[in-house]
Image 1 (spheres, rainbow, N blue to C red):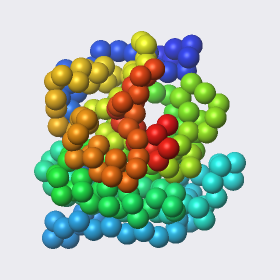
Image 2: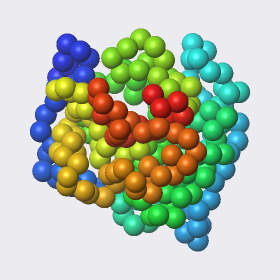
Image 3: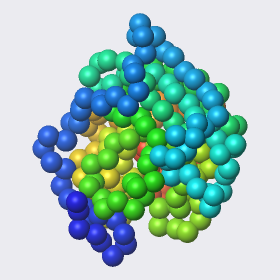
Image 4: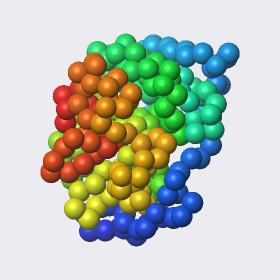
Length: 223
């Protein structure tokens, strides 16, 4: 656990040597796809998934406005895996198209699972790397709802693609990945297959922002 700063972030620390070129093996939460082909499902949110998610009645969307989506993805172990996301009903089919393209490009993703409620208030460890969509939380450093709280944003490989503003980096141990001149697997770059896939469905990328940079972040409204 990292000591907390007054702004609520964990203490920003140097990236450990073993994580400077991070290629960890995926820990499966769902059975991998059979035959190595891309497989996707879209369905109403099952009760057991809702119960282990960040959703509650105080969130800005109801469960009927969300869908439980599973998609195949390639891990850094060069094996296919099955990930899970909660997304807004309006964008579920578009996101299946996006992740199909990522799978075809063999873009590596470490982990893709529904964010749990206890993670919202857990002390920061600075090493998280979960690719996720719906998270019922406010925008970083603000009180307004994040686009994640509507299921209209996706974060991809947060450790390889951190948030950076001033002296803040999140995840807090990912400073080595603010050097975008050293291209490592799992990183996002302008014009790469991931950025192109999200752009094709009209989504904006936080890697182009000016007041701060959020390389992990894609959203329908560009914020």
